[in-house]
Image (cartoon, rainbow, N blue to C red):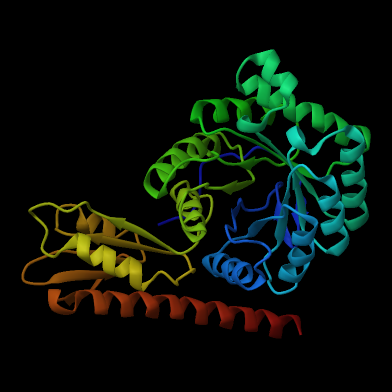
Length: 375
């Protein structure tokens, strides 16, 4: 299946969060946030590594106190993935983590305080060579904007963002990204669409407080999908009341569905019906669990009968079509061999892992050949 998205992405300025590019022609980054106590270094490091292993490009960590700023620095030294310090209310915390080592500062203009404090944070970011994320949330708008608009609106979110962008512009600081989040899909989408045409900086997308695993996934998929289809968005966070690792998985699944990122297995599977020649649902559940560690991109079709099976199988790397007396396995669009139901999942897992290993070996050989030629 050809990996090419028809989406034309909005042109934005490229910034760097650690070693991860955000904006410009960079892939859309996927990030999450720890939910452990930052003072508990071991638990936080463990969770960051879990997110890192799941494929997170960037991880955000809450830093609510100066004491937490000290532990944040120790956490940063134990992980590879870039870390964003999430800071509210006390600007001195931002100054501290900038001094101790951070890859990005996330501040909320609605509660960080006076302009002189924001100026101090800008200076610290400039001196440390780190970007700033301005995070505007519908639930924490400035009091004067709450009074002006009566309630959170797309215009209120944009006005909040623009007044703080003006401050950054006055001090000639351009390495920043913006988020304008609400729990309401329509408000969020309208706000991002409006600001996308007013600035060149990258946009961090998210539907804040989206809900639990199922409802939050649906809401985030709808909202982020609308914006991504418009070409808007340079980094995303799916906010779920669930294990943060699930946020990374859902984030990549959203991007995979729009052909904006290729990571892990892209399963095409039928919902199953009375025509199925094997248990499609059980097969898929087992396969997904077994192959959860796979990060290499691969298209796999699991179809229970011969109605749509051959057509789907011809378009993917590995395809299974249900049949009687045996199911037919396709490799690279060509019928290869038959599989019986008794050992179906074992054979599928082995075939998929062998396919990935072959690709990795071919890529390694190609890289070695290039090195030899250059040498």
